[in-house]
Length: 72
Image (tube, rainbow, N blue to C red; front, side, top):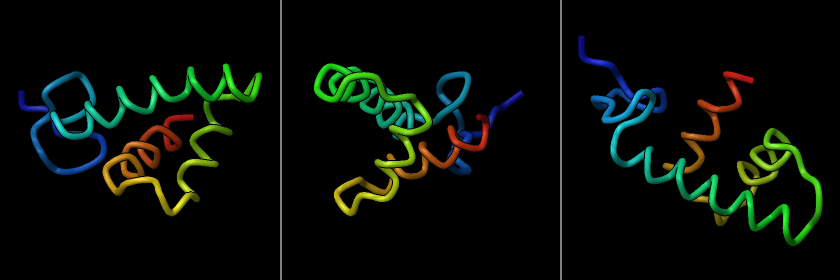
C-alpha cells in the first residue's frame, strides 16, 4: 500500500513524510536541540507553536509543524 505524506499528498518516503517534509522534520529536530541549549527547557509543542508563528519559518516546515501539532 502506498502511504501518503502526513503534510501533503505526495507519496511518503518514510513512515510519515515525503522526501521534502522528511528533510524539514529532520531540520526541526536538529534546531529543537539548539533551542534547548540556548533557552533551557522548552517543550516540543511550545517550540513548534513558536516556530509556526515566525515569518522566517518556511512553508514546508510549517506544514510539518501543522501535522505534528495535530498528533499531540
